[in-house]
Amino acid sequence: MLPSLFFSDQPEKTYAARLPWSQRKRLGQVFTPYEIAKFMAQWVTDRQFPAAVLDPALGLGIFLRALLEGNPDEIPSLVGYEIDEQTIETARELFTNNGYAQIELRQANFLSEPWQEQFDGILCNPPYRKFRGLPDKDSLVAAVKQHTGIALSRAANLYIFFLIKAIWQLAPGGRAAFILPYEFLNADYGTPIKQMMLDQGILRKVILLGDGFQPFEDGITTSCILCLERTPVPCPPEWIRVSALEELAVLATGFPVNERSPRPISATTLPLPSANTKWHVTSMPHTPDHLDELVPLSTFGRVMRGIATGDNRFFLLTEAERRQYGLDLDCVLPCLQKSNYAPGHMFTSSHFEELRQSNRPVWLLNACGNENHPGVRTYLNWGVAGGSDRRYLTRNRSPWYALEARPPAPLLVTTFSRAGVRWVRNEAAVSNLTAFHGFYPHPGVDLELLCAYLVTPLAQRILAQNRREYGNGLHKFEPNDLNHALVMDITRAPEAIRNQGLDLYSSFVRASQDENNSSNLIKQLNELFSHFLESSFEDNKAGHSRMGVDQYGDASSGQRSP
Ligand SMILES: C[S@@+](CC[C@H](N)C(=O)[O-])C[C@H]1O[C@@H](n2cnc3c(N)ncnc32)[C@H](O)[C@@H]1O
Image 1 (cartoon, rainbow, N blue to C red):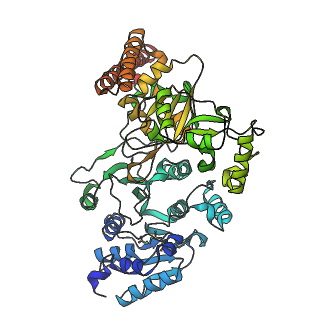
Image 2 (tube, rainbow, N blue to C red):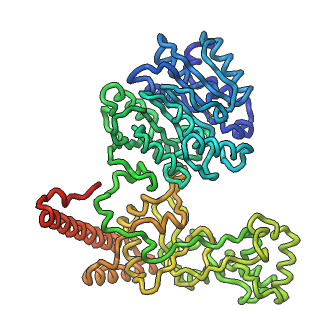
Image 3 (tube, rainbow, N blue to C red):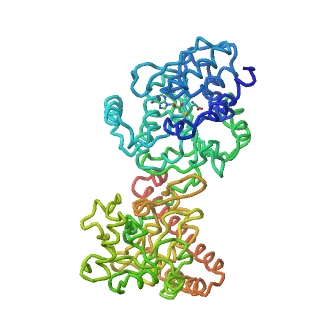
C-alpha cells in the first residue's frame, strides 16, 4: 500500500465496504475520519512526545497511523487493543506491510486487561454499545468499583467503561484525547465520570462537533472530543464548538504556542462546572450570577411523563373505530398523541373536535372498570388475539390493559424539540401520551403568570441548560430535567410587573388562538421579565455588598462566588 493510503482512512473505507454493517455494529465499530485522528494525535504529542501510547479500541489503528505520520522519526512504544480477530489481523497486516511490525497489537478485551500499566499518550474512539445487552456486565461494574470506587449505573454505555479505565491508565504528565457521543455530558450516568475528571483536574478541552457536523457514518449521535492532561496545574477547561473539519485544523495550530486557537472558534474558559449539572457547550457561558434569582420549576408544580400505553395501535382509536367497535364514550378518554396535533400554545375543545372529525386517533381505551361493557369485552378479546397483552409494558401490568392513572394536566410541554420546548395550555383537558409531559401546578400557583414567563426566549435559554442533546439538533427533557430546571421566581414579581405580564400574556393567548402574529407580544414579555430579573439581581447584589461592608468592614466580602 502506498504511504499516502496508509496515512489516510482508505484502509477503513475498504474494510467497511467488505463487511455488513450489522457485524460492525455488534462490535461498535465506527471508524474515525483521518483528519480527526490527526487532530487528536496532535493534542497528545504536541507538548512532548509520549514514550508509551495506547489505543484501547484499535480498529485498524487510525490513531497510531496519524501519530506516526506526524512523527516519522519517533517510534515510541505503541500499544493497541482489539477484541475482534478479523479486525486485528487486518491491522497487523497493514502495519507490517508499511514497515511498522514492531507495534504491539494485542488481541484482547481491553476492559478485562490489568489496570496497572500506564501510558503517557492515549487516543481512543471507544465502541458505542448499549451496556444492558452485554454478558459480562457484572464483572465490568465490579472492576470499575474496585479500582475507582465509582458505582456505575447499568444504564451506562460501554464507552463509559473504556473512558474510565483508560483515564485510570494515564500516567502523570500524560495527555489523552477521546472522541465520544456528546450525550454522556448531560445524561445522569455521565455524572460520576465527569466528577472523576473534575476531581483529577485533567479536563483541558471539551470540543463539541456541533451544528450538524457529523463525522461518523452512522450519523446519529452528536460527538465531542475530550482533551485531557494529567498535570498538577489546575486550570479550568476550555469549551469549544466547531462545525467543520477545517476548524479543528485551525484549533490544532494553537496547541504548541498557548494551547489556544489563533482564531477564536467559539471558545470560552469558565469556572469549573459541577458534575451534577448538564454540560452544554452551546449554552455556556451561562449566567451563574443570576442563579440566586431563579428557583427549580418544581417549586411551582410537578412535571410527569405522559401515558405510555405499551401498544398505541391497540389502545388508540379514531372516531370511526370507536363506533365500529361499539365503544361508548365513557369507555374511552380523549387524548393527545402527537406533538404536531397541538401545534400552538393553546389546545382547546375545538382543536380536539377538528382532530376527531379528521379521524385522528383521539380516543384512549379506558377498559378498567368497564370490562362488562360488551364493546369493551369484545375489543379486549380482539387485543389478546392480536398479542397486545404480551407486549413489554402490557405483560408487566395487572390487568394488562390498565392505564396509568394520570388526570389531564392543565399545562403540557413537548418531550422532544429542536428550537426550544413548547408549552401548551390543555384547555380541552385531554390525557397526554408520551410526546408531551404534563405539568401539574401546586395549589395556589399563578399558572397564568408562570405561563407568561415560560413562553419567553429568556425562559427557554435558562431551561436549555438542563436539556439532553441528541443528534441532528434534537433535544429532549426527561420530566426530572424539567423539575430541576431553573425558572424565574414569579412570586417575587412586583404587582406592576405581574399585571403587565398578565395583560401581555392574555393578548398573546388571543393572538395565538386567532393565529395572528404574536412575536411582538413575546418580545415585550421577554423584555419585561429580563428587566425584572436584571433589576432583582442588581438589588440583591447591592444588598450583599452593603451587608459585606456593614458586617465585616470589607466590601469585597459582598462579592458573589461564581
Ligand atoms: C469505534 S471503533 C474505533 C476503531 C478505531 N480506533 C477508529 O477510531 O477508527 C471501536 C473498536 O473497538 C473494538 N472493540 C470493541 N470492544 C472491544 C473491547 N472490549 N476491547 C478491545 N476492543 C474492542 C471494535 O471491534 C472496534 O474495532
